[in-house]
Image (cartoon, rainbow, N blue to C red; front, side, top):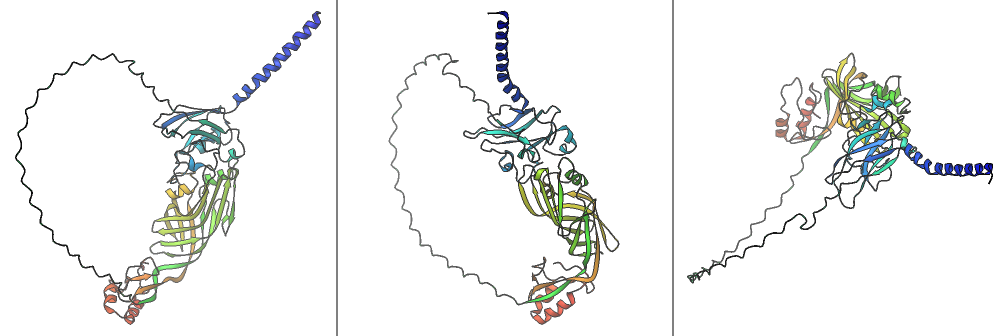
Length: 470
């Protein structure tokens, strides 16, 4: 074989070896680039395990991590199956899901009770709870891209089996035991002395036959008392005036509305039923209500719906028809709320006591609400973005009051004088209010026993100066 032929043969062999090496090495190199998760062994009694992640995307939205039964195949839509799920807690207060946020989202992620930082190289270390070992039940650690991105981008999806510590091996029979010395033969016991025959027992006296118990006479069935006659009358709430116009202005929380429309959430909102956005806050038109300027108390109902979405639909929250209930220096905001959890599960919370606030009033009539804070119900309904007591934006409402008083039709028992229906004061007598002195309605109405007398009394009571407890 010539030298050139030999060179060509060696080159072809080397080329084949390089190609083969590429086939063998490439998959391993590719696998090393993907995310990996390791989980420490769990105690058979359950408890915390250490979860370490490597190779995750250090940019974007971060990842969610959860422990779930091995039967759970998808992260999104299964939060109620995660270990540690609490239906009474918001996702950020429940240990069932941890959001591992990237460095760029530290300002937001650090506010989450169940948030944990990710390093710049895409690694993280967290601890999560696993149940005690139970034969036939296996668990896995799931990861996915957070805020709904993982629904379409599966590059950070992992599934790692939770392993429990092995049962300690039992020592081999007699392996460490020395042979025991043979037991000494026991000394035979002495024969016992035979017992003397006992005195025969006296025959027992036969018990006397018990007398027959006579059944107690049955109690007569209770009879339903005859219904009293009733009358319907109109009772006016002294001091409470109808509100004819007004609006509520509230921006919820500026950091939230800015985040929602920012590049991370990439969201927006739709307004309906009269709600508007003035550039800094939502406005809701008044539907109806009543207010007493003297006591600075009343109930104000507004209309309007705000539907907010972000993170490819995972953030989905609707607030509607707010109500302000004001009593002196304090107030509450009630709203209809729907929202979705961190894994996209939607919940209709219905009417929610959403927030509390401190009240000041001025003019005719302007209500300013400061120190607005989320209630426990509000924090849960707010998709877990904020904790109970978190401060929100201040609110305000301007009202136009009517000279028309607020009156109610109530049904009153003609004998007792108690309100039967028509207000929250059912079961109580109509109170006397104001100029005619202390109330004697209960005694007078009970003693009168006639409809005519009740009508006369009710006319005097209808619009006195104190609030009718309805």
